[in-house]
Image 1 (spheres, one colour):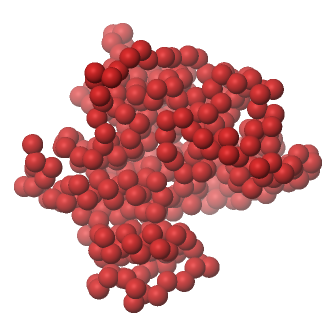
Image 2: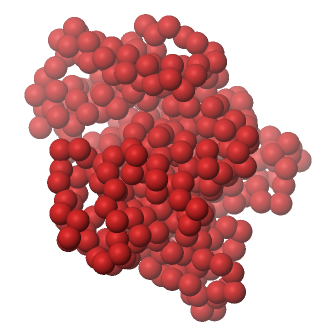
Image 3: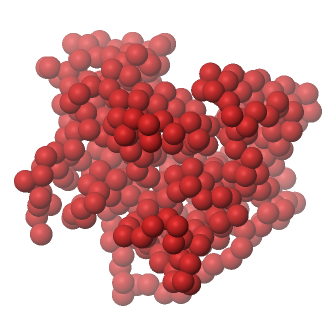
Length: 399
């Protein structure tokens, strides 16, 4: 079957927010393999100017947006016909353009919310790779999509797996979903083992190649906590019907258990290009660049329950998924600060979830915040996490 099969269908005209990150570069690779089906209209990057320019000359989009106000870019370096945009206004212009069908939201952290919100307000389809958007404002975002006719399609491998497994079924027929996780680089370790973890050790993920922040989240299991919250909003399931199981091989990405007892799973090698492509070609399946399973090389798969004592981040995720409201904004912001301080060698690994716990305990909970109130919670939580880190004198230099 030709990679451009289905060319009678109109091209999916996309904007890639965060094109210089790991998800963004994989998205452009998928687009390059399916030129008859995917057209890149716009890309955005923060500070990696050289890579952003290289991408602009490869895909020749209509728009290139630079989001770091401290970085300059000479527009004459862009290909002919490519317009340079800047900041949040530039993002909004790209994602709301009538010539755009789908926005890939791949900006890391809370910064990804603005672009997703603007796209949904314009009734666009958003391929969500930025899990923090739903963690921070899941209820408001899903309500907005329902109101404007926008659509959310999951790109996270676990949520894409659930989405694929439930095709043809009603969510009312789902008993529970089970998110799988590799366990990160410290699977099987004890609290004592993690007392002096270095940044280099935490960044050595056993199966996935990801950005620094999400790799640390994987090491603390905060990524699974955030995915529980994301699943709660994407699929409308309560926390009690979302489970997590450790699967070190990262071949099975999620299970869906139906009310009749049947369980469906989605399997593939750990390659983000497959869920990205499915979101961009849905409901079609086409040959693409993602790796395929080597069936003759498969052996036993291993599963185990997560260690909640050594990795308390996961319980924070369940708490936030149950309570909703302002909790997601606080957890996400506190975690971003704590991870940043850890990566800078200013915080111990075990103190990352402790800083998040402190912020959640101290914040003024509101079950129905506005978007502006969530933004205020985000700012408060960042300040509170920094205060907690400084106040407890846990700042240490670790390399």
